[in-house]
Image (cartoon, rainbow over all chains, first blue to last red; front, side, top):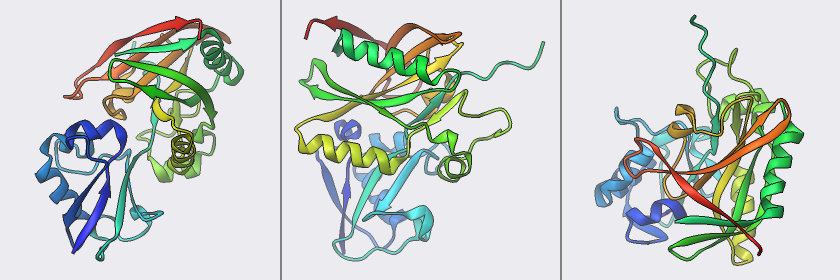
Length: 99
Length: 158
């Protein structure tokens, strides 16, 4: 059951410039695992060292945030389209409250 | 890679920083990349979603919401970002990076900036001291995510 994962511009350098990758997957977790097995340099930009999806990395199934579906266990169907979208975030170093 | 922009685009970022002081401002820079240079065509100010603390916390939870607010954190709504990106692509432009301000802090990336960055994008930071925009710098995350490298910013008469 191939699904399509759209690769955002800054990460295409790790997928041989491919704009999307097709993987066989029944869930979002399987799709991302398939993607990062095929293109291992992607892994560190999507997952933390302990294997959790980074908090600022959003996955959309069509136009729906998987956070509001069944997260990484969200089931996928043939021809589904997943998008990887970062939450752009940042800020200053917090002031040290120690003396 | 170097980032090329003109004086008026630079001023747009600096003035946005001043306008939103003492909160952090944010926005996106659009343009074209040719492999060696990024040429900025448009600067698009966006809303700092941390002003809407509840929705922001739902999208990207903060460890310490008591101390982390719109004054030291920014967040761009991913849906708004998708809309801007789609609109840019239709006009032959791409997202080159993002800017934000550091109110009363130096224009250097924080650890929080690094943890939430991807490579390739330019991350511009304008320092705003007591409401006055000061230094403006640009940074690119290294492949191994360990640090940001400074990026040359060329102000051209475009």
